[in-house]
Amino acid sequence: MLTNEKLITLLAIAMPAVVQQSHVAVLLLFTLWSASAVAESETLEFHHGVSQIPNYELKYPRDFAHFDYVNLDAPKGGTLVLPYTWRFNTVSPMYKPLGYTHSYDQLLVRAGDEVSGYYCSLAESVAVSADGRSIVFRLRPEARWHDGKPITADDVKFSIDSFRSDIIAAGWAGTLGWITGVETPDLLTVVIYTESDATKQISLLVAVPIVPAHYWRERDLTESTFELPLQSGPYRLTAADQGRFYTYSRVPDYWGRDLPINRGRFNFDTIRYDYYLDAIVAREALRAGEFDVWTESDLRHWLSSYDVPAVERGLLVKGRLASGVLGGSGLRLVLNSRRKPFDDPIVREALSYAFDFEWQNRALHNGEQRRANSFFAESIFASTGLPDEAEIALLEPYRAHVPDRVFDSVFSFHRSDGIGVDREGLSLAQQLLADAGYRIQDKVLVDRLGEPLAIEFLISSENHKRTLLPYVQTLSILGVQAGIRLIDSTGYYFLLRHGDFDAILAQGWMETPPSWQLQRNFHSTSTGGNNSGIDNPAIDALVESALDATDLDQFVASVQALDRVLLWNYYQFPLDARGDDRIVYWNKFGRPELPDEMLSAPFPHGWWYDEEKAARIADEQ
Image 1 (cartoon, rainbow, N blue to C red):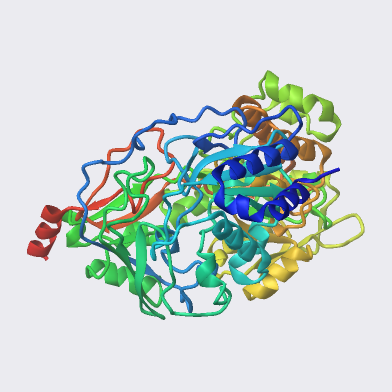
Image 2: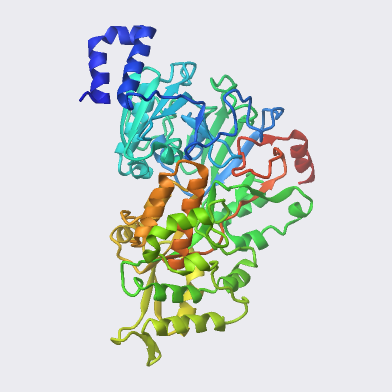
């Protein structure tokens, strides 16, 4: 049988000159390739956008003029200064240097005000095969590198092949491992073959910066360099100094400036990133006006570090940025169910009662956090109430592998009053542990064989001690031998890959919609540390149902049913609901009015410099 690759190769060999020079021949080549790539009766349908959700109706039509959430009258000009607190020793895009997304075009751009809409950027149109295993992009013929040369399919192929082949640099190989091959039938057509549904991975694909093959073939993408590279985006990296700064300058004649996806965006003339030793130094610099915007991830400082006159006078503002494209929880407590006694769901549930979220929220976070009672909190995919008919239909065939409470009880983690020791929670935990065969012997909780219940929390971040130390103390009240082991990140990920741990604190964020993360985090075939040894036929089936969903309703029902089974099995405990990003910024910018359904705030490219506001700050400081 003639495969896609063989057909393309034979046609290219048979008429190399014609393929390069004749538009008719290029169309013939593409038509023949299309017939080979899909079933005989299938014709590829090209669209102006694509979604992770099959049969999803994109919000914006083919002829849309601009995104609704931008300000078309935003003035151009001014400088935005942002901080960074980790060192970079290269400007190669392979290593994701600060701001690299400003200066490289991507195939698609995600809309910020709908559940799942990706619109053509560098690509002019996109098509997906009937089996979902290949995705085809037609590039815009007007697209140009900053040196004036056209951006071609060869550049896209070079970029994807280079990034997915390097197993060291910034994790690209793991991110793109689902891609099996890339072909270029003509100068402006790219075919990407995958081992699974390509659209489910679309957020990973669009993160890849398209780099110029004619520039990087003479250089090594994996080598450290501060030679300013050739780029294509709305900004150009114009200066960089290791351990000091990165400066990006707006390109006035950027080839894509008038595309609908770009109107009202890219308003700053300059975006600069300045290096600071750590967050403590950066906060002092912010208060001194050395840079403009700080994302505050530490609630202690959010609550107490900005009681300064500039805030009282409205010069320095505490605000938020919508970040609904990432839902779920900030952290998840993950138990390794491959190991005893964590393979026992009764033990896992007992351990959940010992975690006093309300006390931690009051004592450590001043009540600012909210408990995530779902793996998909803050999204339409979070389960609520009892399962509906669609969910029950998915769950019923696997009833033997699903706790009865999934069908007749509403899930919620135990809540305490947040004051002192949670005696009710400890009592419930103690009763469950007794049901699992544990008893106190010489102040130690032991099983029927006299083996103590011990748990070691493996961490690579000192900050995680703040969450775990109160939990360890509470577990000790139950007689559990609990401890924390802090190791370097290399050793940490080695132990995770080999399943050599009792429990970890993992990042709990989940994309909206959840797609590629489902298998990695929950399917029995996953070898990742966050999977924690889950091996449940019902969970496997629900993950597969979500990934094979043919419309949004089926997708939502599958994920909500999955959420219930995960929660009632207590494999992992979502902790804090992620919520919007907290920012502190100098009030010298304009921000667009955003709709209620906004999932991702357009920062920094939807903001603009306000000269009047900036002048007021200069006068009053």
